[in-house]
Image (cartoon, rainbow, N blue to C red; front, top):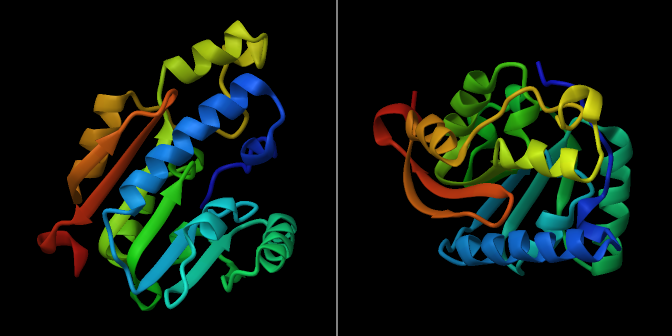
Length: 205
């Protein structure tokens, strides 16, 4: 099962100057890794309001996106319509993905830290990435330290609501490497982002 949805802060449209600077770094890294792949089909899991799907959409690519929240999917559809892009949004969790959902590239950004069992999530990603995965998580303990510095979530020692898994950069690379070959990494502060290719010995299991 997925963990709690956590906060609903729309980081992609924040007006806070520092937060915008950080998000611009995140999006630049995302663009750079995405441009390394030339997929015919893309699936984003945990798409939220759809900003990454809308950003990555290209004419001629079969583009699908899922989330567990019906409310954010409604917002995602609205934003996609305004942007004039064709993304098929459906309600589904990562754990519910099956091999029939496979795509050339799977995007999974800011999702794995919310899962009660991230190993199951990674196993599902290996089953549906044919062969590419683009994933990111908050970099710890930097993420929590930044929350404390700005006076947020002090009772939880800076832990963002809904974050039940915490990885350092090295820890996340080790985690992903259990099922994928990491092709390239990025470290947009304060995240860790990877472009990885599923290992043949696990991807078709």
